[in-house]
Image 1 (cartoon, rainbow, N blue to C red):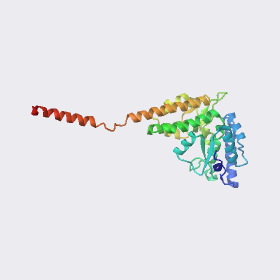
Image 2: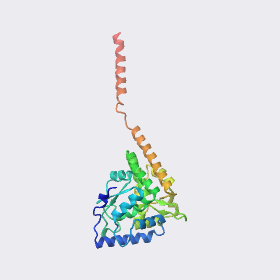
Image 3: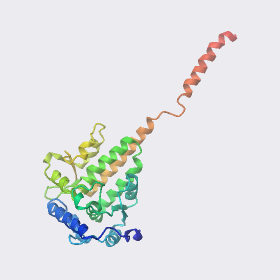
Image 4: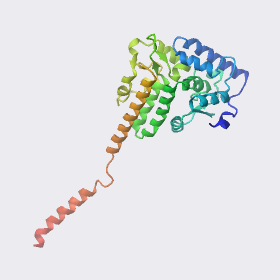
Length: 283
C-alpha cells in the first residue's frame, strides 16, 4: 500500500472545514437512518468517521487496506475517467482530498470532494461483494473501446454505483449509490419516487443499452428509474453482464470497419474485364 501517499497532508485543518464536515455529516446521517443499510452505518463507525473531527485518512487507509486489500489514493482534484477506472481495476480508489467550502455546500462546482468520495464510497468497500463489483466496473473500462460502449459504461455507472439501491429485508430499498449517500437532493428524489420507479437490476442493461436512451434522463435529479439489486451478488452479476455487452459492442465496431484492402478485388476485376476485351483482337 502507498502509505507515503496517504501520509501527505490531506485537507486544511481549519475551523471552517471542520464545521463544513460536521454539517454535512449530521445532515446525511439524519437522512440516511431510514435509507442506508445497517452495514453502511457500522462501517462508518469502524472507519472512525465522526461528526466532530475531520477524518484521519492515514488511519482509514491502513484499516481499509488491512480489511480489503484496497488502497486509497489521494488526489487534490478529480482524476480523469481513464485514471479512475484503471485505478478501480487495480483495487485502488482515488479520493479527492479537498473539502468543499460553505459557498459550495450543496454542489461543489469542481466535481467530487473529500466528503463525496470518502463518505460515499469508502464505507462500502468493507463489504466484499460491493468491493468486488467495483473492481469489475474498473475492469470494464478496457472493453469500452467504441463510442457506444463508452456511453453504456457511463450510463451503467450512474445507474448503479452512483444511484443504485439494494433490496432491504423489510421491502424498503436501501441506498448504496454514492450520490444518494452524500447528496440531500438526490436522496430526497429517490425517496420520493413512486414504487413503479424502483426496477429490478436485471432490467438495467437491456434498458441502458437502447441507442435512443437520452442520457439527460439519468443526469437529472428527477431520474425516473432506480435499479434495485437483490444483493451484492446480483450487482456483481450485472457488472459481468456489462462486460459481455461491452465486448459485443467492441466486436460490432470491428465488424463495421472497412477492410484495409477492400478496393483490391474491384481493381482486379476491372483488369480482368479489360484483358478479356483484348482477347478477340489477339486471335
